[in-house]
Image 1 (tube, helix red, strand yellow):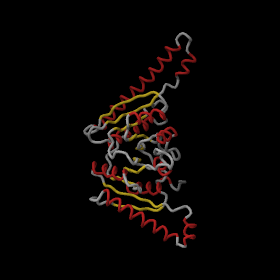
Image 2 (image 1 turned 120 degrees about the vertical axis):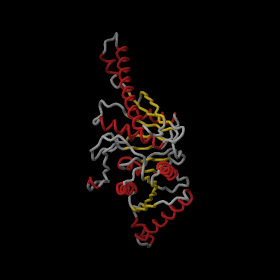
Image 3 (image 1 turned 45 degrees about the vertical axis):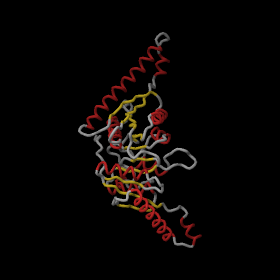
Image 4 (image 1 turned 90 degrees about the vertical axis):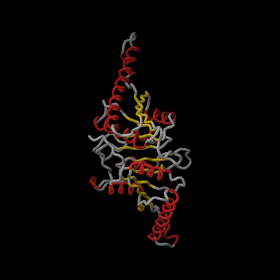
Length: 334
């Protein structure tokens, strides 16, 4: 199982209509840092009622789409001229469902990093990851960095959320490899100077109540405390092993410091709380813990955590992950 993620060679910036263009600038900074190629991507999604619009406006549907494509291209070129005037960048414009076209482009070009601005849901004063973003998190084979409009281009504080509880993992080697890839990716996007990667594991002693229930009245508290301490010691040992491997992965590179943090509680609550307490610039997570599956691409816990965060998210897949849009899967429902 290959745990190593190499620095990106081909970074894809998905452009939006915002004035800030945080995703574009983040992608450009990442590409420049590692000498990678930068490409920009835009998509025109045909309205579901295009035929009705065309009929009522007396226009041909294809002509309407051509007009939308022309307008989109003009906006992209204007944004590039404003934000990256000295760059020669390949511009890709597609028509269709945005997530489908992005993933197909990644598969066709071997793009190894996607940066996109997260889509805010109207009426909500924080960024949730809406339809296109959720599909990308589930189906894009390379890392996906979902930026927010006020985020830093390079992160000073990166939280790498890992799961070192291998006992119940259906594929322990896959999970351990994914943990290492999460830490490596966190290090890739961390700022070159003064950055820290907080390697966060949230744990709990789920059998504590059973120990209380079945221990004798005289030693129930002692037995429960012993159980909790043993679970914590196992997780600390597993974290130490993971960090040793991660530091070996970083050998010979100017990688940021790795700082372990183990906190007891529910992952959905603790990761959000830690991201706020640490003023995290980005939370890096593995979004799938199993390979070889055609239907399960992101766990409910991971999805709940991502939807609760108020900062950017960077999603990493395990080695061997195959997108459901990959031709090797054949024709599949979207």
